[in-house]
Length: 357
Image (cartoon, rainbow, N blue to C red; front, top):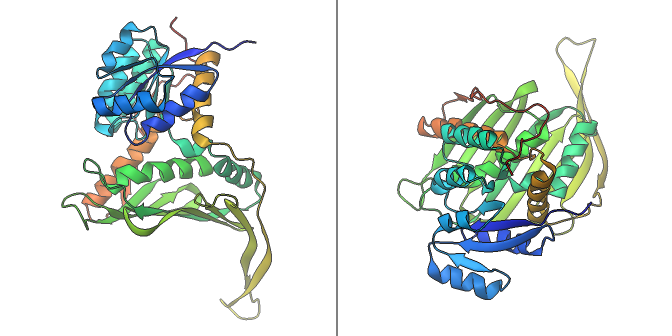
């Protein structure tokens, strides 16, 4: 069946926007019609780089007179809510970069607004569309790794320093999204310690410790002040261990057939010996696709097929609730904070939106 070609507008052409623009230009199911940005020089550059762009404007409200189907928003996070709400109210489907908003009340309001208007609302938690992360998820779900003991994640590099958000809100959404996806659960509580090294009042290094159901621990180190770029997640299970390294171009996942068992001595009360197991290291073949391309195609498919996205508004809301708890812990100097996901949502159980034509 022939797919409907959807008319797309892009809002924001700074650091991440051009990547989204490129993908929607290259996908056959989309027609990138217009780009909006407050910076006229950026718009000039976009027209030169992507001559397929038909129109540019400094006012995204011009979109509402252009017969568009959807928008993709890659603007500073503090602008996400008003822009996305405006677009949804004008019956446009919305793909919005992470975090969906800077507080859970706004995230919930966006979700409810999209439901009321029958619009697709999707959040750019790109790593959930990464083939390597999906492979790791399959290993966990199949039981290949055994019971999961803990997850350790590092997301660090030199920059990019932000002026309106700390390192927690900038980097943690990625790994919070990944951990929720891998474990199919929300964390119960969180403790965060952070430091301000370069800019006064904006934390640039942080350490977060999460407790998930089934007593699974997860730790995340994030930094804008590190000598090398690191994007690495270690998952340790009772049967096997896995290291996922996103910086690696080819060997993104290594599966270690290693482990240890504690053996209780029946003749000596309370004493154990330990049996260590050292097996092979396996590097599975993963058919790599650009995660952003997979994400953008999924957005279009959800519109055409009237489906709820994998990273929908609820997904974005839950990540923001976790970030709020993490921020509260940071401000309380590492105090353990319970994570609330009590915001009421009226999720459609059949996973479909009623579309407005």
